[in-house]
Image (tube, rainbow, N blue to C red; front, side, top):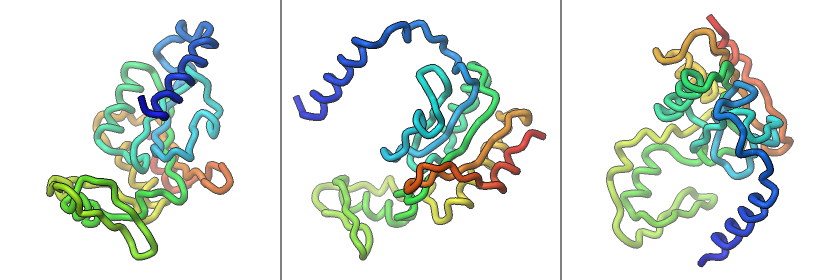
Length: 193
C-alpha cells in the first residue's frame, strides 16, 4: 500500500468518525448555485466561497474551462437539481497558460511519461511509447485569463441547453491573495436576458 493511499484512508476514517448527520443532506445543493473552476490543488472552493457540504455544486477541470462536459454538468445541476446561479472562476498562475495544443500534442507523441518544465519550456523523457491522439484534442489552454473567463461565460450562455434566466458570473481567483476578482465583461455577458 502506498503512503498516499494510507494517508487518504486514515483521513477518511477520521472523517467517518465525525460524519454526524451529513448522510441526511438532500441531493440538491442547499444554496442553489454551482461553481466551475480549475482542478489546481491551490484552490479550495469550500474556503474561498464559504461552502459546507451540501451547499453548492463544484465542477472542476484543467483550467476551469467550459468544455462540453462542464456544460453538461451545469445543465444537470440546473435542470435536475435546481441551481439558479453559476460562477466561472479561473485563477492566476494557471498551468494551462504554460503550453498550447501543439506542445501538448508533441509531448504525448514523444511518450506517455510525465514531462518536465524549466525556463526553456516543456521537455519529455521520450522514454516509452507515445501517441498521436493528443494532436486531435483541443486542450482549452489559456493565453489571457480575462479573455478565457469571458469566452467560457459566453460559451455557456450561448449553449441552447442553458436557459436565459440563469445569471453567470465571471471571476479570477488570485493565488497570491485568495481574493476573487470580477471580470466585469464576463459577468455582463452572463447577465439574464
